[in-house]
Length: 319
Ligand SMILES: Nc1ncnc2c1ncn2[C@@H]1O[C@H](COP(=O)(O)OP(=O)(O)OP(=O)(O)O)[C@@H](O)[C@H]1O
Ligand SMILES: O=P(O)(O)OC[C@H]1O[C@H](OP(=O)(O)OP(=O)(O)O)[C@H](O)[C@@H]1O
Ligand SMILES: [Mg+2]
Image (tube, rainbow, N blue to C red):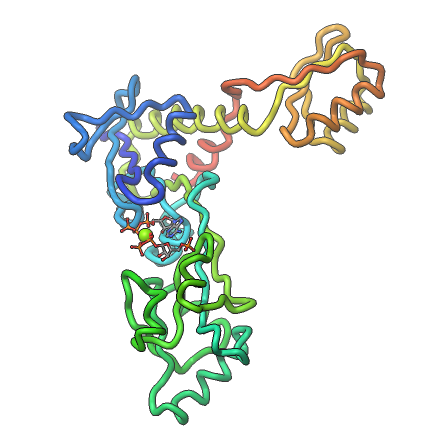
């Protein structure tokens, strides 16, 4: 069976540009078939791969159904649109973009309502006072139901809203909302406030794998290669190669690991080379000078390929 690996990437919206940049960083050049309007593409140099350009929401649905193998989408969409996501998909890696919180927000004028417990109280008395239950505008139906149930908010109704959700309370079509926010500007413009314990999820874009897609040998091999490049880029981006002319014993190496997260890459005579988390480079250098090094250099690498491919290992273990 020569079923190709299908990689779904956002074709529009907030994740599109960042997703393209993410693949480019990993040395994966997406090539679009016959023109910008062709929604199928490929990855240069990788025969067993097909790229599908879809909306983030559509990507999530296809991952759940097993129509695509890999997809880039928001964790908010995965938790909302896939029932029992742990059994259907594997969230392989958070990608560091598409940050947004799914939140419960109420009118700022509700001065006594600060937390979910206050909301539960309001919900209980609301029907008696207003002749109807609370109305919540949202497109996150399942996420809202789960969160409200956890917090004992029972008497409410969801008003499904797919756009301009923040305007619903002022327009009179809902009393509060559950929606996504990044800067908070839209909430503020609509005189809404997030409840103190009302952050339901801190979401970001993820590389997600479908567990039910047809994982042919061709698809597995392509996935292994793609994941090794992604891991190599991530390792290179988050670490620096630190080198010093100083001989260190095993106890000192353990200390470097424990204090700075620095792992030994190579020991060559009197030269010691570490892989060090970027943020710890200066501290490690200081420590190495304290150990007798005359100078310490730090270099940024393009890729760090490793014999063991942790990302692929994790996925392979579930297929
Ligand atoms: N400020 C934000 N607002 C909405 N989504 C965001 C934001 N920041 C990041 N995202 C992420 O991007 C995903 C897709 O949102 P996006 O707005 O691109 O698409 P959409 O709302 O489905 O379609 P549209 O292109 O019509 O807005 C969200 O589900 C979320 O994971
Ligand atoms: O906290 P902020 O930075 O103000 O961002 C939040 C807003 O961004 C999103 O809308 P988007 O622009 O994607 O339009 P949409 O509602 O049509 O998806 C989201 O639905 C909020 O309305
Ligand atoms: Mg949007």
